Image 1 (cartoon, rainbow, N blue to C red):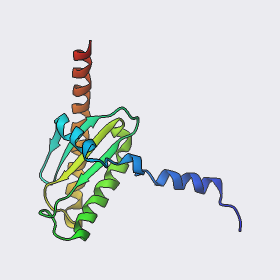
Image 2 (tube, rainbow, N blue to C red):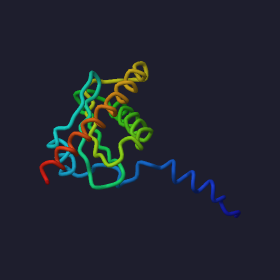
Image 3 (tube, one colour):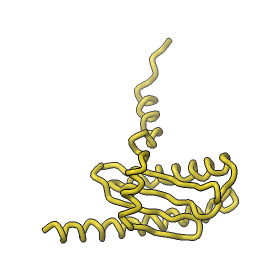
Image 4 (cartoon, helix red, strand yellow):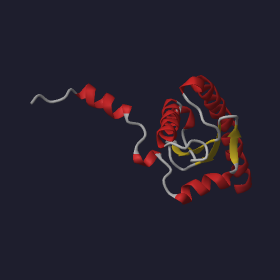
Length: 140
C-alpha cells in the first residue's frame, strides 16, 4: 500500500480544528465563563466570553430542549455554531466562549445567524480588551 503524501496529512490535520481540548467540557469551565459576565446578546444567540491562559480559543454550546424538541435540530444548531467558531478562530485567540441559543434557527434564516455571530465576535473582542485592561489596572 503506497504511503499518503505529506501534504495530504498536513491538510487533514488543519481541517480538524475542534479537538477535544478546544471544547469546554466540565461544568466548572462553563461556570467560569458565566461568572465573567462579558457577553453579547441578540435575537438568535447570546455569546459569553472569558479570557483564558491558552493561546487557542475554546467553545461551549448550549441548546435546550425548550428551543428545539428534536435532537436532529439541536445537533444542526451546534454543528453550525462550531463551523462559524472554526472560521473565526483566529479572531478569538485566548478566549473561552459559550454560545447560548435563544431561538431556533434553520437553513432558511442561516444568513441572519451568520451576521449575528459575526457581530458578536466583534463585540466580544471589545469586551475582552476592556476585561484585560481592567484586570491589569487592578493587579498593579
